[in-house]
Length: 246
Image (cartoon, rainbow, N blue to C red; front, side):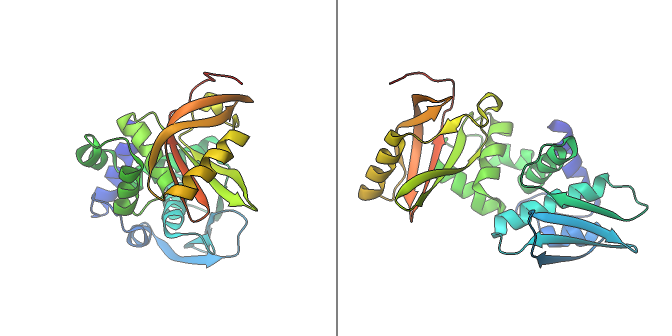
């Protein structure tokens, strides 16, 4: 990651851009030779296209501001990797599995939330959801990207889980900074849903508690801070191998 962090600094400095978030992604794209950024009806989050010496970035219509900025940064990484000659099409896939996709995701995160700035501003801050929100607001990023960077740069060791209440059932819809050994191994137990319902019934504030989860199909209880608001729930949690079973 240090090499990618250094690359983002060189790119911004070389183009006369500020190193202080929020980075102006539209100006950066223009200085890197992008002719236009347009919204389009896409299946993927974004696409980089170059034809007849004209480069443009397409972003999926309807994405929020944080996702739009991340997608642009991701596509700019593809542009930096591309051969200067010839036409190209690079897609921003939802599942980044190729080596280049992984690099572009890391570049985007480092560009939006520079490591030197993160250490300076957040190294002494508590590991709380409120701090994640503050970082997200300052960097104009997403909470998922913020938690990933806090984990990579400041070794928070925490994961972000997101649920949506769908027809009175809590459905786990996203996770960030999940330990690699637990990818695809986190699930919602009946006890999880009951606890989220209980929190929703009494407060919209962040609550520290012990959160029941299915981890590798076993019921485990993990330390977490939970927020339930407007039919969605967030948990900033310490994830590890199952510690209890019922």
